[in-house]
Image (cartoon, rainbow, N blue to C red; front, side):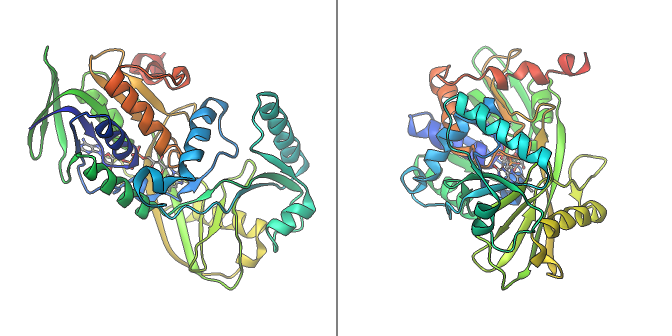
Length: 373
Ligand SMILES: Cc1cc2nc3c(=O)[nH]c(=O)nc-3n(C[C@H](O)[C@H](O)[C@H](O)COP(=O)(O)OP(=O)(O)OC[C@H]3O[C@@H](n4cnc5c(N)ncnc54)[C@H](O)[C@@H]3O)c2cc1C
């Protein structure tokens, strides 16, 4: 089985890169060891957020924001995206000052997507918000999407573009020769000129297989879904400096996350819910939105994802091995970036370079030698 490019990992970043590269004429095979979206991409809260983005990620995030408003045009489905707005509240004066400073910095850079909102505005955006919330930042064009619909839309678009997707296919060995890559998998041998490492929480393992040892942590972010409630909130709500992300689904249930961490198994292959950390996360939600008091939890889960020390992704060519591209380490906020990062990876695959500045995402940040030093 041979192709121009073999993408390892059937999460949204693997699928997005596959779709974009195939549309530009590359022969693409994508292998996924479980089923598409089994890990972070299926576990995600699917918040579509430019609000509070790291400055280095902002160009990619703003480009992706435009894509989210025309997902139908990109993948033939709106992916359940709703521009319900994202609100980051300040629960104390210091948080409010920090938000103000951030918005001023953004405006000095020419970015006006975040707006400062005062106590009256946050109450009109979110009736029922706790009286102690002082104000915050608001992005009306942000929102959230349906993760499973997004996976399905990217999968279907990729298949229509000619991508060959092979599920239940674990890559176990990678060898580089003068002509390209040979990948041994649980479903046979694959050959390709370029390999893309989009293996999420296991990107370090794939990088070792490829002879470019990299190191990252694994995030184990927990999510909660509650029973339906008569309360109504429209925007996605976060709290500055706190692990909180709260939104309501169209069915009336609340989806609560924000980065509280579960327990990673010793073999780093799975993770379980940490009830104590989860309780703290629920208290944070009730503090901001008291109507949640007494609303019952019906389901919890943990999603696993690679995390770097600066929380920025790794995007770019290996500096050790020819024909290897890494795209991982989204550290809990990669869902929104899916469309633009896919385009960047396709640039690297099809042109060998991209016009985007990838310095902040360079691979050397996570090389074993660098991390050990
Ligand atoms: C609970 C949670 C909430 C989140 N909320 C948000 C949010 O609100 N907004 C936001 O922007 N982002 C959010 N994120 C982050 C976002 O979901 C991720 O950044 C994104 O989904 C990562 O996609 P991926 O394709 O890189 O990784 P994944 O979806 O994890 O895909 C990697 C795939 O590689 C496969 N794989 C690994 N090793 C191999 C191998 N050797 N052979 C074959 N296949 C292999 C894995 O099985 C996996 O399916 C959240 C993440 C989590 C976990």
